Image 1 (tube, helix red, strand yellow):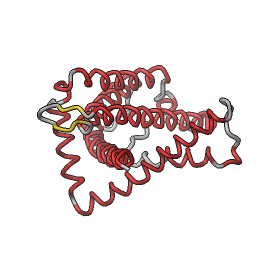
Image 2 (tube, one colour; image 1 turned 30 degrees about the vertical axis):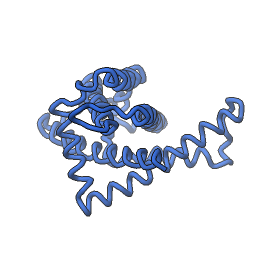
Image 3 (cartoon, helix red, strand yellow; image 1 turned 90 degrees about the vertical axis):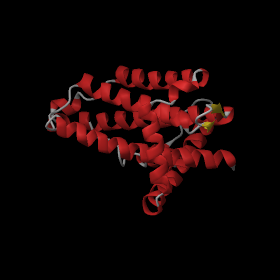
Length: 219
């Protein structure tokens, strides 16, 4: 039960972080007069976002923020959940690009070129490496940017109306994690064979991935 509560908490944290980052991204777009972003610019911004998310996630895995008291099982679980979250985002990006390719010339060139698999893997890997480094140097996690996000997330979480909304998102987040774990176990039990569409697992997994695009920018 404690594990499920922690995953639920991370779901709320991820949702509020996405909302806050969405506000920051809107400001960045206004500063650049809403001009189309180049591929390098897109992944620099995404890299900063993912690194901050890894940092903030680590802060919520600490038992005491000021004393940098590490709760081992929470850090391990937080890393696994963070990995699954990033993989879900990668799958969503791949699915969007597959749709863009099917639509062909109806999609602007800049939109079709806004995805790069190597860059996606690089920003995800860098963020996970940072999360691992913070285990050994937890004091690095308590910087000005991560503390601002941490305090802002706690404030929004405690707010009655907005807190309730994000708790609902957290509920769907934990359902998504359970769907993914069930899908992974089924994959292993089937000897590495992909489940057939008729068993409903693929549909459940796709529903889980879509739950967290509410505040994700569409590049």
